[in-house]
Image (tube, rainbow, N blue to C red):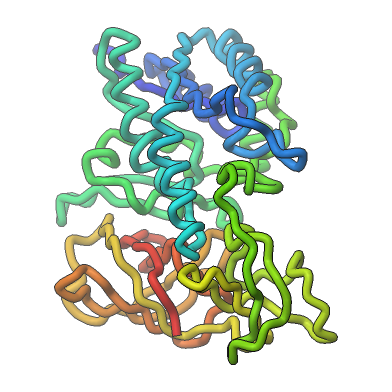
Length: 362
């Protein structure tokens, strides 16, 4: 029987390295691929974290080469720095400038990691791959009754990353293998030791970047007023790109009581502050709906919804989309920091049904 060819995404961390090792052990013909997204011409901030996803890639590629050598697999390095700049960073800047908090990982997964990367890798290798594999903690499978591919939460509920994959298409899911779905992080590190991989104890990366992000905006960040909900001026901010709903630290306002960001008005270049109770919202409206494990929302549906990756899923009801594709989510209890621009992803038990991007909340 002919070996199935698998393209294994490798980032230089323990998760993707172990995923590649498991695939090799299972008998797949594995080719590793590193997606280069860092442009050496990009200036670094003094607070830039080397452990972020978007950061100088020198040490990561060294680790990947070591792992590929130990596993005896081919390795491709695909330069998508220009595409990353246009698609992901372009989206990132646009969202922040319009007063929203972006989710670059979701966009990168849909359009680069599971889109352009396997296409470019096939061209580079000179042959096509049967599957694409990554080190995400989640499951994928096929429902014979509905004919749809589905996503499911990973076994390690503290590491489950299905949230970041909600924008994938049925075609992308049909070719996806997620070897780590049934493992915990502790088990993955133990497997790295078993396979004698040099990344066993490597520190985890951040989701995107850590530290000052204003360097990504050049000179396009303007100072402006900080107000309360009644429009009273409390101080000045140094650019709305430095703020997100629910933020408490770094506000630079001495009010004698805790204050939090409750909203951002991009049109007026204003950051709005309030008390803790003002940050809780019970209803949201979202758009760009992508359904994964179901074909449609035909009636109000009871689900568990997450408004950020690190938030716990909460009981809610989703209404069917309107003519413009907008849909509402009503939570049983108010949720903390429901933020425009972030993804709302909803589940039935462990099955990811779909998700969209938050437009506003009440």
